[in-house]
Image 1: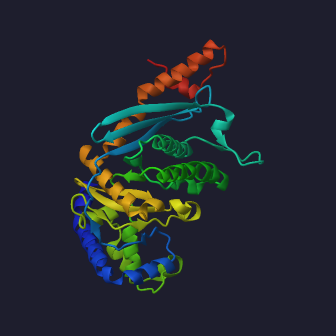
Image 2: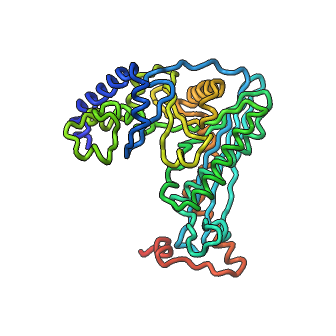
Image 3: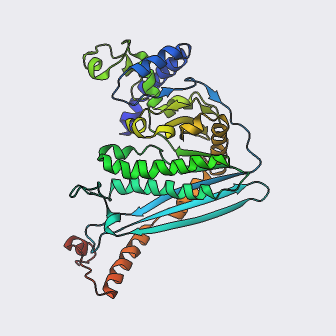
Length: 385
């Protein structure tokens, strides 16, 4: 593996240099590229342009008083080998206030789910189509609960202080695209987006911004916009044009990530231009919370910071996100310290999981309820020699 990576180093540098040349060349053709992106149909995500391509902005000054609120989560999944079906979600929270009277509040909010209404999502009036909440779907529900707790804490943020509500990971619930519409309705529309709306409404009386932080992103939305620029077709339709294309101009920058691109554009503390995510689930459901994003250089990392539309179009809130996220990274050795602290409160260790299931089984025994487990589970816990 290492030998292959070493051998391909020169090719990767050549593709990155080509991407950088294309980025700077398209600055004079932003209007034309914007029209081409809007008109084209691609099977890969292409960033929508807002204020340019290679623009970079220095961090604005910090407010005198400010608060950063962050949540993160962990969970214990349903185990089909255990005697009862249940799961646990633990949401860790950090509220860090900076200024003349600095303070910190760290807490966690565990919740056990075991009722029939908690274990499945069912469409209204339809039997037999229930979607069990476990595995990947439980991970999505945990993200919804993180946002719910963030909205609760944001409502209690101090008046007169600038605040940032911060989530870990993407604002886009990517995994929901694989589920039926009634699951999207329950978790996204009535869940995640409703909590984002609660946070947005707080700005009527307080100055509060919302953002999510993605460390070491693998996205290539901006690079894909350069692929559209390189394509000789006036309007690109990948389903029609790519299979018969002989020249493959876009392959000249294939495999380049956005973070590699902006590591050569941004200086320490700077952010990129703002871009729009054109994910299908965002375009269909998010409305005023349509996801915008920018890249930020903090220490040796290029991070992706996602914000809803109502933050992106408010210059004051956008600058607040830039300043506070950068400050958090500088305080936290390259990663937002509030998210690190929230994670510490949320983490569920292997020992915690074992104790949890022991408590479940012992509680069943105390109440004279059956506590049967699968033969596979018993085998793993039994010494053979």
